[in-house]
Image 1 (tube, rainbow, N blue to C red):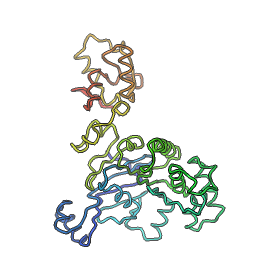
Image 2: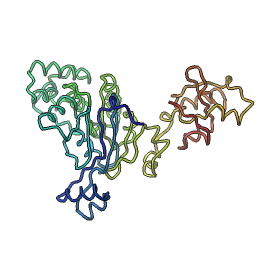
Image 3: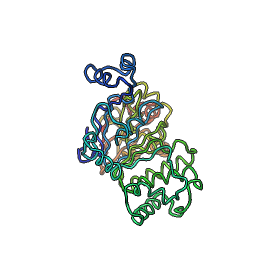
Image 4: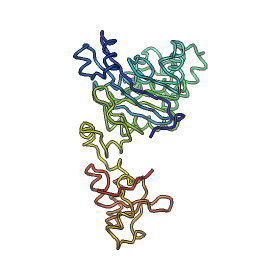
Length: 363
């Protein structure tokens, strides 16, 4: 079901990017007869970077795009602000068709509406943290006092208020990435694009920055597109995830959606090693009360331990263990909306979604 148009900040429809000297002929082959990626390479010696990608980023969400090296994810994110020009397809950002923007308006959109943080922060070594953070505003001609005030505010948000006069060489990798994020925040953009910003960091610092980024983005009411090759990172950060392969988006959904209902074997293999303990929720594994009572007519539902639709598998296991019960009632607004059985929990842990029949849909 599509989100309401006012809730969609970025809308991409059938995006293609084709690289090569014969790109024009390759584009015609794609648009006129639906040539595949392999056919484009064989017939025109062109590489398809992104193949027919469609996605929507909603207001206030963190949308992760993940895939292995060469899947097209970094090419796709650079098309969102036209750092790379699409070969085919349409992108609208906050209702504006990006392909129709002249150079001046495009610079304005990049400067005020869309912030971007790359894996390589590229801080200027002979400028202080404060000066690096305000550099984008300086390029736009903003006065010193105004840009310093914006930079100080952004640095405070990322926990670097005490490091204003330090230089990049004095900062750890994690702190440099915080400066990069602060620099993107100085113009107060509604959208932040993040291209594998934490991939070069140590695991402990990486997890800390993931949590800080998610919390800060939510607190500030920003929307973000976050590129990663790490499924654990996508799950930790993203509200929704798009999985890419060979330039195409294979599946889009919440982590729970993707893990319980992989679109194909590639996605199934990708998520096979992910723990379901904290991802799968009661509403995804419960069956209807009527179906449960049909098989267990003697059970008094009011006597069963109670839980809520958003309880995760770990919490469900704890409940059935503590109460020595074979089933739990799922309650919402003082009503029983479903039953979770121990069999349903085991199926979910094993990769299946819910019981064999009568799954009660919630939401």
